[in-house]
Image 1 (cartoon, rainbow, N blue to C red):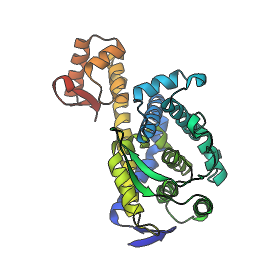
Image 2 (cartoon, rainbow, N blue to C red; image 1 turned 120 degrees about the vertical axis):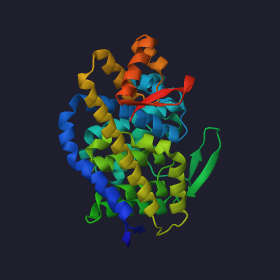
Image 3 (cartoon, one colour; image 1 turned 45 degrees about the horizontal axis):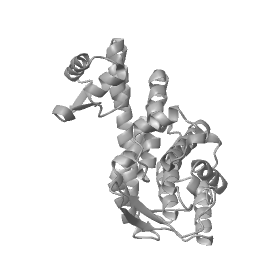
Length: 346
């Protein structure tokens, strides 16, 4: 069934309805899960934060691994943030922390969005001239690839009055629309924000932060224990392709494909979260050494036996024996062979 939401066309078919139902069924049980998994959730939130910061900045060209991000965030020294990647990582981290701690106090207004942008780029030396203000020059959405090449994904709203008007209309619609399902509104807001590209730089990062903010404000509290950014990074080519496909039909485009992508990302990370919680529950009956290894695998999917042995200071033969036990009881799964063998939870 075709419908109109804001200025967009949307095909409300069974695929979308089923995705919304699955997301909301999980959400309905979340309060019970949250009460049962106190300590596990603290660990998951810490890990999700690192993955989110690393993934979202890498999408925009950062070269920092999650491990490097973790080291930086544990030893933040503002006076020594000399390189661009570190400046962007710390800015993203502080903005994400603010959203996590104060999401109910942040209004969806132009002033709030500008304040979040200002915080996001607070330490970025190259962005001091424009942070917190709408763009002064035309910009385009570009994909940055590992080999250093770039590709224009789509053109954006022109600077000046067109950008100001577009943002005013988007914020007004979001406040006034009380009928559209909050998941659809969140996905649509994120899409339109990145399509307008209201700021000179940092729009992609801020759009992903806003997705988390809107989901939290609409009661989807589980989002802070998983990384939507990491899911998008793992599907980066699809992410850009979907944006390009929808954008090519502006204005009044059909954004069904974007909504499907956004919902499938949420469904995937919900399932990942459930698997991690199930694995964490299995730890209760394990010895401290077994528990430490399983926790490490949960927080470092794709890790190898040698890495586990080194980080946890456990002899490698012992680690391999415990991994074999985990595989037999189906607590973990193995990928690859030989030197490339690595492990993750199901």
